[in-house]
Image (cartoon, rainbow, N blue to C red; front, side, top):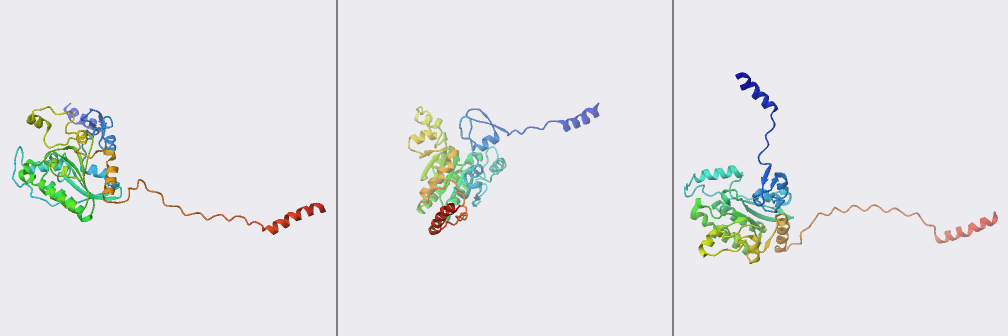
Length: 325
Protein backbone atom coordinates (compact mmCIF):
# COMPACT_ATOMS: atom_id res chain seq x y z
CA UNK A 1 0.00 0.00 0.00
CA UNK A 2 2.86 2.36 0.71
CA UNK A 3 4.23 1.85 -2.79
CA UNK A 4 0.79 2.44 -4.35
CA UNK A 5 -0.03 5.48 -2.24
CA UNK A 6 3.43 7.02 -2.30
CA UNK A 7 4.38 6.44 -5.92
CA UNK A 8 1.58 5.17 -8.19
CA UNK A 9 -1.17 7.54 -7.05
CA UNK A 10 0.96 10.75 -7.24
CA UNK A 11 2.17 9.65 -10.67
CA UNK A 12 -1.39 9.20 -11.94
CA UNK A 13 -2.50 12.48 -10.38
CA UNK A 14 0.38 14.33 -12.05
CA UNK A 15 -0.63 12.95 -15.43
CA UNK A 16 -4.31 13.76 -15.20
CA UNK A 17 -4.35 16.76 -12.86
CA UNK A 18 -5.73 20.03 -14.13
CA UNK A 19 -3.42 22.93 -14.84
CA UNK A 20 -3.10 25.52 -12.14
CA UNK A 21 -4.65 28.89 -13.03
CA UNK A 22 -2.19 31.82 -12.78
CA UNK A 23 -2.94 34.22 -9.96
CA UNK A 24 -2.50 37.39 -12.02
CA UNK A 25 -5.31 36.83 -14.53
CA UNK A 26 -7.72 39.04 -12.57
CA UNK A 27 -7.17 42.32 -10.78
CA UNK A 28 -9.47 44.01 -8.32
CA UNK A 29 -10.24 47.69 -8.74
CA UNK A 30 -9.28 49.46 -5.48
CA UNK A 31 -12.07 52.01 -5.97
CA UNK A 32 -15.20 49.98 -6.79
CA UNK A 33 -14.02 46.40 -6.14
CA UNK A 34 -14.80 45.11 -9.63
CA UNK A 35 -12.75 42.12 -10.78
CA UNK A 36 -11.12 42.99 -14.11
CA UNK A 37 -9.54 40.58 -16.58
CA UNK A 38 -5.88 41.46 -17.12
CA UNK A 39 -6.09 41.74 -20.91
CA UNK A 40 -9.17 43.93 -20.76
CA UNK A 41 -7.48 46.14 -18.16
CA UNK A 42 -4.28 46.38 -20.20
CA UNK A 43 -6.18 47.31 -23.36
CA UNK A 44 -7.93 50.05 -21.37
CA UNK A 45 -4.58 51.53 -20.20
CA UNK A 46 -5.08 50.34 -16.60
CA UNK A 47 -8.31 52.29 -16.25
CA UNK A 48 -11.25 50.53 -14.60
CA UNK A 49 -13.97 49.83 -17.13
CA UNK A 50 -16.65 50.10 -14.44
CA UNK A 51 -15.85 53.25 -12.44
CA UNK A 52 -13.13 54.83 -14.64
CA UNK A 53 -10.59 54.74 -11.80
CA UNK A 54 -7.02 55.34 -13.00
CA UNK A 55 -4.78 52.63 -11.56
CA UNK A 56 -1.01 52.76 -11.33
CA UNK A 57 0.85 52.70 -14.63
CA UNK A 58 4.51 51.67 -14.79
CA UNK A 59 6.86 53.87 -16.85
CA UNK A 60 7.39 51.21 -19.51
CA UNK A 61 3.65 50.63 -19.87
CA UNK A 62 3.09 54.38 -20.08
CA UNK A 63 5.81 54.90 -22.66
CA UNK A 64 4.54 51.94 -24.66
CA UNK A 65 1.15 53.64 -24.94
CA UNK A 66 2.60 57.15 -25.38
CA UNK A 67 5.31 56.82 -28.04
CA UNK A 68 4.46 56.02 -31.64
CA UNK A 69 4.43 52.27 -32.10
CA UNK A 70 5.62 51.88 -28.49
CA UNK A 71 9.18 52.56 -29.70
CA UNK A 72 11.50 54.65 -27.53
CA UNK A 73 15.17 54.86 -26.57
CA UNK A 74 16.25 55.03 -22.94
CA UNK A 75 18.48 57.96 -21.98
CA UNK A 76 21.65 57.05 -20.14
CA UNK A 77 21.73 58.20 -16.50
CA UNK A 78 24.91 58.67 -14.41
CA UNK A 79 25.19 56.16 -11.57
CA UNK A 80 25.44 57.69 -8.07
CA UNK A 81 27.00 56.18 -4.96
CA UNK A 82 25.02 53.07 -4.00
CA UNK A 83 24.62 53.68 -0.24
CA UNK A 84 26.04 57.11 0.64
CA UNK A 85 24.86 57.15 4.28
CA UNK A 86 25.22 53.43 5.11
CA UNK A 87 21.56 53.60 6.15
CA UNK A 88 19.78 50.73 7.84
CA UNK A 89 16.22 50.54 9.15
CA UNK A 90 14.42 47.18 9.18
CA UNK A 91 16.84 46.05 6.47
CA UNK A 92 19.95 47.42 4.81
CA UNK A 93 19.40 50.01 2.09
CA UNK A 94 21.21 47.97 -0.64
CA UNK A 95 19.01 44.97 0.21
CA UNK A 96 15.92 47.15 -0.08
CA UNK A 97 17.08 48.39 -3.48
CA UNK A 98 17.70 44.84 -4.71
CA UNK A 99 14.24 43.76 -3.55
CA UNK A 100 12.62 46.69 -5.39
CA UNK A 101 14.63 45.99 -8.54
CA UNK A 102 13.57 42.34 -8.49
CA UNK A 103 9.91 43.18 -7.91
CA UNK A 104 9.64 45.87 -10.59
CA UNK A 105 12.29 44.84 -13.11
CA UNK A 106 13.57 48.43 -13.18
CA UNK A 107 16.91 49.80 -12.07
CA UNK A 108 15.47 52.79 -10.20
CA UNK A 109 12.35 54.85 -9.62
CA UNK A 110 12.59 57.01 -12.78
CA UNK A 111 12.87 56.07 -16.44
CA UNK A 112 13.93 58.64 -19.06
CA UNK A 113 13.35 58.05 -22.76
CA UNK A 114 13.32 59.85 -26.09
CA UNK A 115 11.15 59.20 -29.12
CA UNK A 116 8.20 60.55 -31.06
CA UNK A 117 4.57 61.02 -30.05
CA UNK A 118 2.28 61.82 -32.95
CA UNK A 119 5.41 62.40 -35.08
CA UNK A 120 6.56 65.03 -32.58
CA UNK A 121 10.05 64.35 -31.14
CA UNK A 122 10.11 64.67 -27.33
CA UNK A 123 12.07 63.63 -24.25
CA UNK A 124 9.99 62.13 -21.45
CA UNK A 125 10.60 60.96 -17.88
CA UNK A 126 8.26 58.91 -15.69
CA UNK A 127 8.40 57.82 -12.05
CA UNK A 128 7.49 54.32 -10.86
CA UNK A 129 5.51 54.45 -7.61
CA UNK A 130 5.95 50.70 -7.10
CA UNK A 131 9.72 51.28 -6.71
CA UNK A 132 10.04 52.34 -3.03
CA UNK A 133 7.06 54.65 -3.44
CA UNK A 134 8.65 56.44 -6.40
CA UNK A 135 10.75 58.31 -3.84
CA UNK A 136 13.16 60.99 -5.03
CA UNK A 137 16.75 59.77 -4.68
CA UNK A 138 20.09 60.91 -6.05
CA UNK A 139 19.52 58.65 -9.05
CA UNK A 140 16.10 60.23 -9.67
CA UNK A 141 17.73 63.67 -9.57
CA UNK A 142 20.41 62.52 -12.01
CA UNK A 143 17.75 61.02 -14.28
CA UNK A 144 15.71 64.23 -14.31
CA UNK A 145 18.78 66.32 -15.11
CA UNK A 146 19.92 63.86 -17.81
CA UNK A 147 16.51 64.17 -19.47
CA UNK A 148 16.62 67.98 -19.32
CA UNK A 149 20.13 68.07 -20.78
CA UNK A 150 19.08 65.69 -23.57
CA UNK A 151 16.06 67.87 -24.35
CA UNK A 152 18.28 70.96 -24.60
CA UNK A 153 20.77 69.10 -26.76
CA UNK A 154 18.08 67.88 -29.18
CA UNK A 155 15.91 71.02 -28.81
CA UNK A 156 12.83 69.00 -27.85
CA UNK A 157 10.01 69.48 -25.31
CA UNK A 158 10.49 67.81 -21.94
CA UNK A 159 7.53 65.88 -20.46
CA UNK A 160 7.61 64.50 -16.90
CA UNK A 161 5.09 62.08 -15.37
CA UNK A 162 5.32 62.43 -11.58
CA UNK A 163 4.29 59.79 -9.05
CA UNK A 164 6.04 59.84 -5.69
CA UNK A 165 5.65 59.85 -1.96
CA UNK A 166 8.43 62.42 -1.50
CA UNK A 167 12.19 62.28 -0.94
CA UNK A 168 13.85 58.98 -0.06
CA UNK A 169 14.62 58.94 3.64
CA UNK A 170 17.44 56.39 3.26
CA UNK A 171 19.49 59.09 1.52
CA UNK A 172 18.56 61.90 3.91
CA UNK A 173 19.75 65.40 3.03
CA UNK A 174 21.29 64.11 -0.20
CA UNK A 175 17.80 63.25 -1.46
CA UNK A 176 16.48 66.68 -0.44
CA UNK A 177 19.32 68.31 -2.39
CA UNK A 178 17.69 67.03 -5.57
CA UNK A 179 15.04 69.73 -5.18
CA UNK A 180 17.38 72.66 -6.02
CA UNK A 181 19.26 70.54 -8.59
CA UNK A 182 16.11 69.83 -10.57
CA UNK A 183 15.04 73.47 -10.26
CA UNK A 184 18.30 74.54 -11.92
CA UNK A 185 17.67 72.02 -14.72
CA UNK A 186 14.19 73.51 -15.30
CA UNK A 187 15.73 76.97 -15.52
CA UNK A 188 18.09 75.60 -18.15
CA UNK A 189 15.08 74.48 -20.20
CA UNK A 190 13.45 77.90 -19.90
CA UNK A 191 16.62 79.67 -21.02
CA UNK A 192 16.70 77.40 -24.07
CA UNK A 193 13.07 78.31 -24.84
CA UNK A 194 11.84 74.71 -24.60
CA UNK A 195 8.47 73.63 -23.17
CA UNK A 196 8.42 71.80 -19.85
CA UNK A 197 5.15 69.92 -19.30
CA UNK A 198 4.28 68.07 -16.08
CA UNK A 199 1.67 65.33 -15.87
CA UNK A 200 0.79 64.68 -12.23
CA UNK A 201 -0.44 61.15 -11.57
CA UNK A 202 -1.71 59.47 -8.41
CA UNK A 203 -0.09 60.12 -5.98
CA UNK A 204 2.30 63.09 -6.20
CA UNK A 205 3.31 64.35 -2.76
CA UNK A 206 6.19 65.60 -0.62
CA UNK A 207 9.39 67.07 -2.01
CA UNK A 208 8.47 66.15 -5.58
CA UNK A 209 5.41 68.40 -5.41
CA UNK A 210 7.53 71.10 -3.78
CA UNK A 211 10.06 71.05 -6.64
CA UNK A 212 9.84 69.95 -10.27
CA UNK A 213 6.23 68.76 -10.20
CA UNK A 214 4.90 72.30 -9.73
CA UNK A 215 7.39 74.26 -11.86
CA UNK A 216 6.13 73.32 -15.32
CA UNK A 217 4.93 75.60 -18.07
CA UNK A 218 1.73 73.52 -18.18
CA UNK A 219 0.36 71.24 -15.45
CA UNK A 220 -1.92 68.36 -16.39
CA UNK A 221 -3.31 65.79 -13.97
CA UNK A 222 -5.07 62.47 -14.31
CA UNK A 223 -8.60 62.30 -12.87
CA UNK A 224 -8.88 62.01 -9.08
CA UNK A 225 -5.09 62.06 -8.60
CA UNK A 226 -3.87 62.89 -5.08
CA UNK A 227 -1.59 65.94 -5.26
CA UNK A 228 -0.12 67.79 -2.30
CA UNK A 229 2.85 68.37 -0.03
CA UNK A 230 1.71 67.09 3.38
CA UNK A 231 -1.08 64.64 4.08
CA UNK A 232 -4.58 65.87 4.85
CA UNK A 233 -4.46 64.40 8.38
CA UNK A 234 -1.30 66.38 9.17
CA UNK A 235 -2.85 69.58 7.82
CA UNK A 236 -6.02 69.10 9.85
CA UNK A 237 -4.02 68.53 13.02
CA UNK A 238 -1.93 71.64 12.32
CA UNK A 239 -4.68 74.13 11.48
CA UNK A 240 -7.31 72.34 13.64
CA UNK A 241 -9.98 72.66 10.99
CA UNK A 242 -11.93 70.22 8.88
CA UNK A 243 -10.74 70.20 5.27
CA UNK A 244 -13.29 70.38 2.43
CA UNK A 245 -14.33 67.21 0.63
CA UNK A 246 -12.00 66.24 -2.21
CA UNK A 247 -9.17 68.35 -0.84
CA UNK A 248 -5.85 67.71 -2.66
CA UNK A 249 -7.59 65.90 -5.52
CA UNK A 250 -7.00 66.89 -9.12
CA UNK A 251 -10.49 68.29 -9.72
CA UNK A 252 -10.36 70.42 -6.55
CA UNK A 253 -6.95 71.82 -7.53
CA UNK A 254 -8.19 72.56 -11.04
CA UNK A 255 -11.10 74.59 -9.66
CA UNK A 256 -8.69 76.56 -7.44
CA UNK A 257 -6.18 77.41 -10.18
CA UNK A 258 -3.29 75.07 -9.33
CA UNK A 259 -3.72 72.94 -12.47
CA UNK A 260 -4.32 73.79 -16.10
CA UNK A 261 -6.17 70.63 -17.09
CA UNK A 262 -7.44 67.28 -15.89
CA UNK A 263 -7.17 64.84 -18.78
CA UNK A 264 -8.25 61.23 -19.10
CA UNK A 265 -5.44 58.76 -19.72
CA UNK A 266 -6.89 57.72 -23.07
CA UNK A 267 -6.78 61.32 -24.31
CA UNK A 268 -3.38 62.15 -22.81
CA UNK A 269 -1.32 61.43 -25.94
CA UNK A 270 -3.52 63.59 -28.14
CA UNK A 271 -3.39 66.39 -25.56
CA UNK A 272 0.40 66.29 -25.27
CA UNK A 273 0.93 66.21 -29.04
CA UNK A 274 -1.26 69.31 -29.51
CA UNK A 275 0.48 71.21 -26.69
CA UNK A 276 4.01 70.32 -27.81
CA UNK A 277 3.40 71.27 -31.41
CA UNK A 278 1.72 74.52 -30.40
CA UNK A 279 4.49 75.52 -27.97
CA UNK A 280 7.21 74.57 -30.47
CA UNK A 281 5.39 76.54 -33.19
CA UNK A 282 5.00 73.53 -35.43
CA UNK A 283 2.19 72.72 -37.82
CA UNK A 284 -0.95 71.14 -36.32
CA UNK A 285 -0.69 67.38 -35.81
CA UNK A 286 -1.67 65.04 -38.62
CA UNK A 287 -4.67 63.03 -37.49
CA UNK A 288 -4.26 60.19 -39.98
CA UNK A 289 -2.09 59.10 -42.85
CA UNK A 290 -3.56 59.70 -46.28
CA UNK A 291 -2.99 57.03 -48.92
CA UNK A 292 -0.52 57.83 -51.67
CA UNK A 293 -2.20 59.21 -54.80
CA UNK A 294 -2.69 56.60 -57.46
CA UNK A 295 -1.28 57.14 -60.92
CA UNK A 296 -3.91 58.51 -63.28
CA UNK A 297 -5.08 55.89 -65.78
CA UNK A 298 -4.53 56.85 -69.43
CA UNK A 299 -7.68 58.38 -70.88
CA UNK A 300 -9.49 56.28 -73.49
CA UNK A 301 -9.32 57.85 -76.93
CA UNK A 302 -12.72 58.89 -78.21
CA UNK A 303 -13.74 57.51 -81.60
CA UNK A 304 -12.87 59.80 -84.47
CA UNK A 305 -15.77 62.00 -85.48
CA UNK A 306 -16.36 62.65 -89.18
CA UNK A 307 -15.59 66.13 -90.37
CA UNK A 308 -18.58 68.43 -90.86
CA UNK A 309 -18.23 68.43 -94.67
CA UNK A 310 -18.09 64.63 -94.78
CA UNK A 311 -21.06 64.30 -92.41
CA UNK A 312 -23.11 66.71 -94.48
CA UNK A 313 -22.23 64.87 -97.69
CA UNK A 314 -23.23 61.60 -96.12
CA UNK A 315 -26.58 63.03 -95.03
CA UNK A 316 -27.32 64.30 -98.56
CA UNK A 317 -26.27 61.03 -100.20
CA UNK A 318 -28.70 58.96 -98.13
CA UNK A 319 -31.95 60.47 -99.57
CA UNK A 320 -30.57 60.25 -103.11
CA UNK A 321 -30.01 56.54 -102.74
CA UNK A 322 -33.53 56.10 -101.40
CA UNK A 323 -34.96 57.92 -104.44
CA UNK A 324 -33.05 55.67 -106.83
CA UNK A 325 -34.53 52.65 -105.14
